[in-house]
Length: 501
Image (spheres, rainbow, N blue to C red):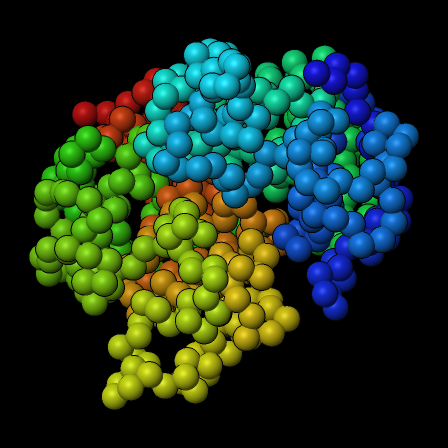
């Protein structure tokens, strides 16, 4: 095992994919035993540069030096041999293998001719304990929730004895408690001389855990500074290259009167949600807060017929029984999944096919009309600010923020009356977040009822007219957004505060 720190230097690094150049002469260095915040909008080149460092992509030009030696890694195994490990933002796990199998995949321990399963389970258990995940190493990964999969990815890096650890949006799915544990682990690794590159759009986290901030924009290095010398506002301005005005739109008055767009009564999803009552009016933004596992996503999956459920659902004052998302869309209710690439988009499809998938009936009478689809895509690109080099590319080629805007446009194609947005800004940069926040306000102003499920409490406080807080499958309280604080939301989410009877 490499027990020394890892020093890295990028010298005029260039990367091109065919005729498209994505890194333009990037030069900076990383010293051992420091935590670096690597910032930039989606598409700035951060992930590409880190994939070069971790051996997943070859550089096109320039030089990468590790501990003073020029390196041209052929694979991630070459980088890992020097102690360089990347924790991917998109999980790199084999769903049908166990947690222990995933942690040691490609690095299996042997006892003679056979795999040493006992040793691997023991070491996997130790790595899981280090990141605070209490699951049996024999558990199949497909049985884990998203937050647990993220912790398995971190445990996998721990088991590989990383000396330079690259974390790409590591807290996107974690609860506050899990995030605190991760921050403690980062402090411990830093004290042991491990270099950490922390990529995140959560500037409060960058401010808290990093020693230095490095900013990239449009495939170029633009700035670096000690973290304590920069405010979050200055970080955001460096990322986008311009002054960012207020992140959240001004809050409109709470709509009153009329029939609720959606009313839910005594609704239960076995194992996840019990006896839930709420309503949302046209023009209202209703937030849903709660820790991971509180049952928010599962509640709405039950509403859309994706899980067994019971209770009363009214849309526009009419009682409905929904058996599938398609049926829900016909009644005016659509849902954007928190899993953008798994359930929100077909990333191997084109932009046009993704956009119209939920509303094909509009474009397929008497047969499919590609010209109508192309016109709809051109309108969506303009209306939702989707940036794409060409309208003929696959969704996979878009940045995270633009993928999210496409996914939003897709769920709005059926012209719903109620739209549920589950973690609508997860993994997108500050500029795209602001665009999405103003889009949400625009939808509400157009008369839609908008439900926002989010783990970012400030997002709910900044956007919502009211915030419903769930804990352990129950609705603890519904609080007015005006004057709401993070401390209040956390108190209800953790059960230290309760609604008055």
